[in-house]
Image (cartoon, rainbow, N blue to C red):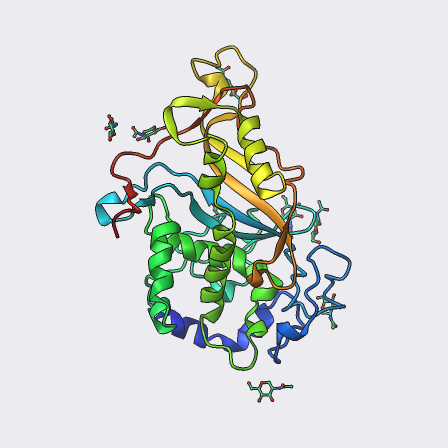
Length: 324
Ligand SMILES: *[C@@H]1O[C@H](CO)[C@@H](O)[C@H](O)[C@H]1NC(C)=O
Ligand SMILES: *[C@@H]1O[C@H](CO)[C@@H](O)[C@H](O)[C@H]1NC(C)=O
Ligand SMILES: *[C@@H]1O[C@H](CO)[C@@H](O)[C@H](O)[C@H]1NC(C)=O
Ligand SMILES: *[C@@H]1O[C@H](CO)[C@@H](O)[C@H](O)[C@H]1NC(C)=O
Ligand SMILES: *[C@@H]1O[C@H](CO)[C@@H](O)[C@H](O)[C@H]1NC(C)=O
Ligand SMILES: *[C@@H]1O[C@H](CO)[C@@H](O)[C@H](O)[C@H]1NC(C)=O
Ligand SMILES: *[C@@H]1O[C@H](CO)[C@@H](O)[C@H](O)[C@H]1NC(C)=O
Ligand SMILES: *[C@@H]1O[C@H](CO)[C@@H](O)[C@H](O)[C@H]1NC(C)=O
């Protein structure tokens, strides 16, 4: 199997066809000289603006984060950050809240595509599993070892090596932004610069959405001996972010727990996910956004007061901020 760079290099000819709009050219796209219209506004229309400079496809941009309590690969040094949530990804939903995925199969680096078809239906295009090597050498090629180190501290997978999560997020989601199309990088595109650009952009959002600190300001901190309410978590995050985020829970359903026996509340009881919705000015790459409410996405959490746990990390699963 040839290395990542070659896999893309060999398909340059198809890359133009893989753009979200057939008329996206690899002419120069100098976005600093374009007006950075807000995504999902009437101006954010591919007939009116340069779709490489204003997000016109997936204009409802979401910074998504996880709260895991272990990684399963602690023995290999894959640890979670103390006093911090971890990055899930940066997602381009349509303005109406629906979405698509795996929009450019010429940029498929996900070893375990999920869903396994482009539309998650049996009749969709099958997403071929990536069988190539770890994509980490791409960082070195761009002189970005510091970025790789940061990602190994804050963009953490559970049950698989971190790079598989990064590759999954890139191929499933980055390829569905109009502004990350290969053609947008112009005549001097360097293979894989879109990958690095997506990772850096995702981090830009993550750093502006410090979930751990935001919750701690409201005295909501991880604990295995305290419970919280969905409403207090949602309201704390909404106050800090400026719009209501999606708050997600896994774990036992409340009605299946001892405390919730007989209840009709079948929401999850373990707080583990937050999605921050936004509209963005110009390219999402700039990280210049307006928070927007979660809209019609229903929480998966139990709503009964005091039903939710925000669990402590497993002993030995965190790296310490006090030690390098
Ligand atoms: C490019 O194509 C999109 C649809 O694919 C269309 O909406 C848009 O008007 C086209 N832009 C130009 C400049 O022709
Ligand atoms: C949402 O918007 C997308 C993209 O414009 C469109 O394909 C889809 O049909 C819309 N979905 C609904 C439920 O309106
Ligand atoms: C996709 O996964 C589902 C569930 O595991 C399976 O039933 C289906 O056959 C798979 N489809 C393809 C095209 O591999
Ligand atoms: C794929 O399957 C869905 C659901 O069964 C159906 O609505 C849709 O028309 C199918 N699409 C094609 C292209 O056959
Ligand atoms: C676009 O960039 C190329 C270099 O990559 C340059 O040769 C060309 O003059 C530029 N075109 C315009 C219109 O600026
Ligand atoms: C809890 O709710 C789920 C989903 O409605 C249901 O499948 C399950 O049987 C319920 N458990 C109990 C103990 O009623
Ligand atoms: C807290 O509970 C979670 C399960 O919900 C467990 O994974 C974790 O190890 C516990 N933390 C400690 C410090 O015992
Ligand atoms: C985790 O460590 C704390 C003290 O650091 C200790 O009190 C607790 O019992 C440990 N939990 C487990 C599950 O080992």
